[in-house]
Length: 105
Image 1: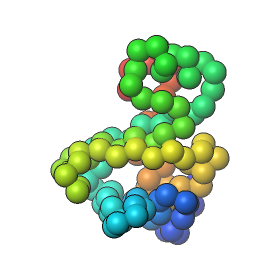
Image 2: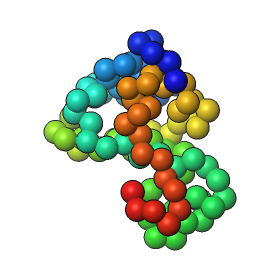
Image 3: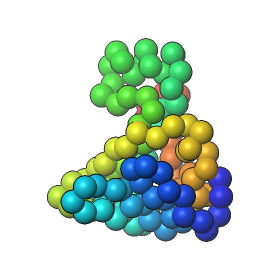
Image 4: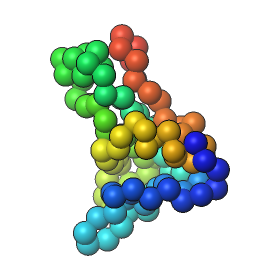
């Protein structure tokens, strides 16, 4: 976890106060105060099997639920490796709820 630095990946840029999802036509800017919840499930066999039988989410994706619509959507998801999740700014990392089998999101 880093402080006050922009972390750039292939499909997104994470800043301490916003997330920018890169798209072909236009970038999607999500302010941190517009985020209701964020979910992430690290890829493990146990997580894969428990999510595969009963939940619509998948391992390796960061799911972002929003309070208000951004570009006509209330949520976004993007694939990101766990080792990259650990590099995110502290303000974003602390908002992520990590999946634990047998516990509800």
